[in-house]
Length: 477
Image 1 (cartoon, one colour):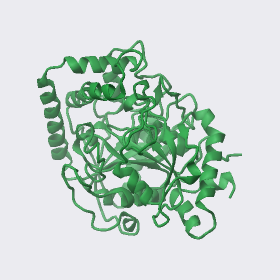
Image 2: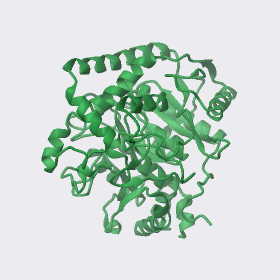
Image 3: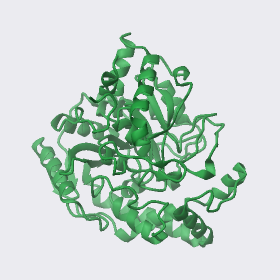
Image 4: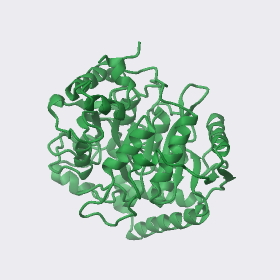
């Protein structure tokens, strides 16, 4: 198999070749390394490609048997492997615990061959850090692939691997999917276990999944990764059937709420608004009932949630720093994150109560506003990919409040569904006049990934994206 052939397949397609004996799993790992060597010096998406990648274990029975996979260097851990979370504070850190997520990845047949770049501890929508430098978008090297799953997004968009892990506390899977032309699902809260050490992380906002290029890979990944595990705080409804079977079932007629009016004060680029309207037209032509959905929450509540996510996100850092034998200072934390850490330590206990009340109110308000809709259609991001340095935790000219304001505007459509726990997916349906991808987000009712799978399939057939290639792509002539 040639490199350009390898890079043209999704994960399902590569696994089919392995099962048929047309290519060996070890050959796919070697091709992934060749792809990495070809494009990673340009995009800086992968911070480590394992020296022993050809020997990593993986099931020969799973739906993704033999397929190379990259791990986001934050969240789900591999026992004994480096996990540095994009931070000098964690440099050299090797967890001793294997996450349930990674156990299921291996059981699904995937071969974990390396780890991808993240912004420091995931607290940025741009993947830039003092530890690892700038990760570049394969569609435009002057733009970010997003964050915090930006390294995974850039690696998949550039063809190093067809699938990589991601996690999302307010848009960290969906945003990079939108910026990088990928499929990015944030599943329902509780659908996938983050145990045994991170159950219901990020105060219930954060969930783990993958970034990939096709809806069938998304559906198969749900089948591989879903399900409860010991220590999970609650259970959600079990799906009626495997998600892959949903690809062959009728969608029916849905009531669709469309976010034409900007949410949370975010102004939309004209191309993004046009893409949203065109998606609604496609859904209408399929027979669905389309209505405009007014902003379903108070923007002030959204900002309170985002501020709390930052201010309270560092409260456990003293314990972690002590375990690593390090101090928290300018040498170990980037400037904005250090300020968030110091602010968090100074806040009264009542601040936490205000944060959790904002979360409760968001869930109630959005639940009431969307209860009559089967799906909600929004932009994923208000613009195409931002330029490097737009706002990062390394900025020297931003205050923490200004940073939060920038994040609130950029992720106006992200945090809301993280807060409610509803599943939402970004689909790479369009490109702007600048040639950059535009993702459209679809959210469904809590626990109803099945509807998202069917609608995503319908849109993939109506607006095919599989043949699109970024300018920086492995094996591209």
